[in-house]
Length: 156
Image (cartoon, rainbow, N blue to C red; front, side, top):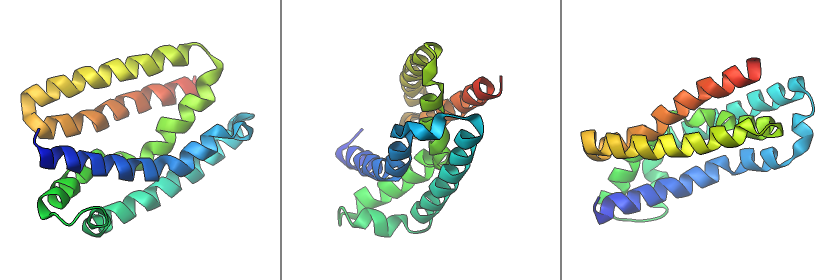
C-alpha cells in the first residue's frame, strides 16, 4: 500500500472510533445486560443510532474527510474505503454489545480470539487475491460471519 492508501485507512479508523464511541460507552455500563429484554431493547436503540451515524457518513463523506486533510487523493481513497468498510457499520452495536452480553462465559474469549485470527487470515488471503479492494472487503465479510454466530449464541 502506498502513502495515500495508508492515510486514507487511518482517516477511516478515526471515523470508526468516533462512530463506535457511544456504543462503547453503553457497553461499559453493565446495567443494560441484567435481563435479556433490556439488552435487546438497548441493542435495537444502539443499532438505530449506528444507522443514523452511518447514513451521515454515507451522505457527506467528502466533507467529513476534508476536515482532516485537503489532499484530494487521500480524500478520494478515504471515501472509496469508507463505502466498503462501513457496509456493515449499522451493525456496530452487534459487534460491541453482544460480546459484552456474552462475557459471562469463557466461550466468548475463544470466539473473540477466533475472530481476530480469521480476520487476519482473510485480510491476507483477500489482499493476495484482490489487492487493496480485497483487504477492504475482508472486514465486512468477517463481521457478517460472526454476526450470525453471535445471533445464534443469543437465541440458543
